[in-house]
Image 1 (spheres, rainbow, N blue to C red):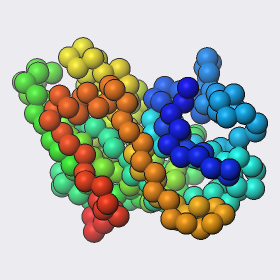
Image 2 (image 1 turned 135 degrees about the horizontal axis):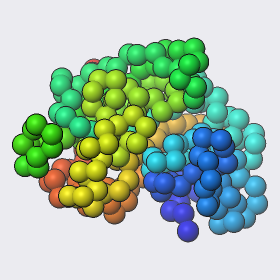
Image 3 (image 1 turned 180 degrees about the vertical axis):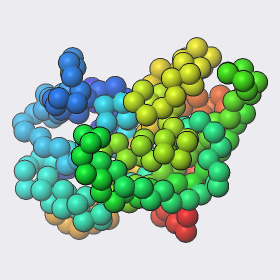
Image 4 (image 1 turned 135 degrees about the vertical axis):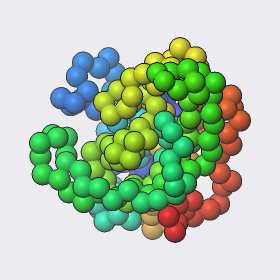
Length: 242
């Protein structure tokens, strides 16, 4: 059963597990299950995706109960009226501790035309672990809060890799040596990118909505091991002014 974060007659929000493909596409290849099919079975009747998350990413995902609601939510996403906050564990300490990554990105095809893309980030916590890797006797990692201001394909993953702080566990844009380190020393086998909070207006009532997806056991255990705490609730944007 998928964890439902919110549900009414028009809208469902689920906490998508890492590794679960959202729907069938050429990008995901051969997958055993798809979130959209599991949701149809779980709630009964037709459901429609309002947006998407990468297969390796976990967190808040919106699903509409009708095509009209999906279209209304889609307009909010296209109009950049949806505020998204992601948690990412990255290689390095991300200097400076807050900033704006403004770097055009292509679509799903790397050879395609590049379009404007911006992501704000703020460093929440750091750690240095005494594990030798390459020529360094210690390794530095950071927990970041990332807020994409645009919605390009794999935007956060590509932007963090662009500033040389790739997401741990990212097989396409990350560092294989650090990914292996996390598997071997910390038992962490997932990509450490989580769609944590989503703020938008309810498509029918217009009421403000703020949804938050808890971390899964693997992600939460890693933060506990590092002594990292998440930001207190209630702040509109942890990255404002970055």
